[in-house]
Length: 507
Ligand code: NAD
Image 1 (cartoon, rainbow, N blue to C red):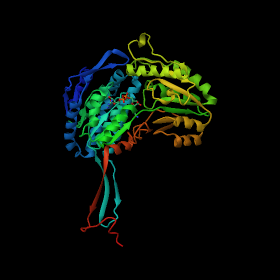
Image 2 (image 1 turned 180 degrees about the vertical axis):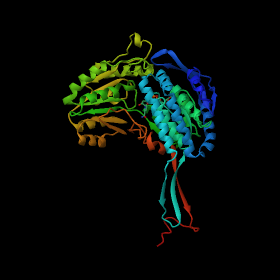
Image 3 (image 1 turned 45 degrees about the horizontal axis):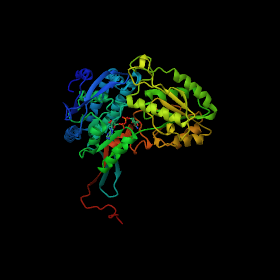
Image 4 (image 1 turned 90 degrees about the vertical axis):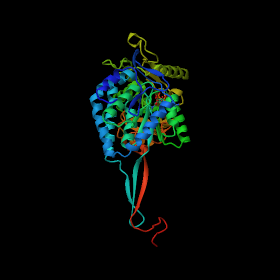
């Protein structure tokens, strides 16, 4: 990945290798997998290495070696590479967004947003190069100085999902880098190209060899060895709660810091005093944006009984008008699902919801017409009459399927919203400031929006959830710095005599 002019060539080349120690490396396994366009499966985006433990080991060795020099580069100098990366990403935004729509499916407007998130993260984290603040504090002893400083953790292993193919890798890589760590990243098998584009940009911006390495492949073969590797000092994982649990258990067995960002079943509450047209607009975007494949997707809409009928009629009317198709086509609002399994999951949950007695108001099936014949398209789906205990109200579908529930009182709405195992995002539509503040306090989630849907995080605020969504860490904002650094407390005694804390009290 040496020259900037290579970028175009790389994205058009169909055969990718691993990127290890500043060189392209054929996987030891000699196996590859295909990355196909979910809107048109006859379109092969590229083939990528199906790596195994030996490839992971090579990448970790390279990252470990690079750490010895990278950690000594002053943070403001490390940050200069991030600034340049942000500038280059801005220049390449259109091309990278196009590549992303082709491999992941979401519409071009949204993939531009995904690249923009990486740009924003680059500039935000570059700013940290001149902050990375620690603390100074008085010592209890005379002529003694006390401070705490942030130290890099070492080699960070990163495992990414497919739904934000550039934004999520940037949330992991950029704070890790500015803090002085080196990285091995395993992209999601559905969307590796966007990680390659991101790392290509870092390299073009001057990142030294070995500081970031890519090992592509499947979870059990390439992800698990990364988590288990003794020279990987920290693991950052984003994905399903099911896989996150395994990753967390393995990391715990090795006493490794491990950040887990996982699923959600996010509720939007619509009170009787809400601006209904605004709430419908928000529901459409929250439930069907990114084809419902966001961890923060609005997958439950809790409606006050007084406005439920009116809201539902309007939502169904607007949903049926959504244009579903290839995200590269102008005017399309909802892209395909990312792969065949995801569409099967949507179908399965439609069957489950019907069996549970929910009332199907829109969608509920694959789209098969001429425009949809070659891809994984699912009609935006609405279920009404959903009860809080039903599986469709409890489990993450990760597709364009939304459940409508009803409530009588604010208290009941909060109880239903909180009555799930996840705790990522929540929202309330109301004009009552007291209720808005009570919701901010009482909703059990890492994120609460007022008069906006459950999606729309900005990069300088902490991102993550409670309960089975996360294990207490945060990406974005200063939360990320806390994960990618470890605190060192330093005491400097300039008294020239032995002074004993807690003992030489001066009494
Ligand atoms: P997934 O858990 O199937 O895969 C995530 C990553 O883990 C992939 O790179 C995969 O290859 C890897 N993996 C799979 N098995 C592994 C194993 N045994 N060991 C190590 N790695 C393994 O999730 P997905 O389908 O890619 O993404 C969808 C999920 O991600 C949803 O549940 C969604 O809510 C969640 N998500 C959460 C956030 C968040 O920040 N909270 C953001 C985006 C997506």
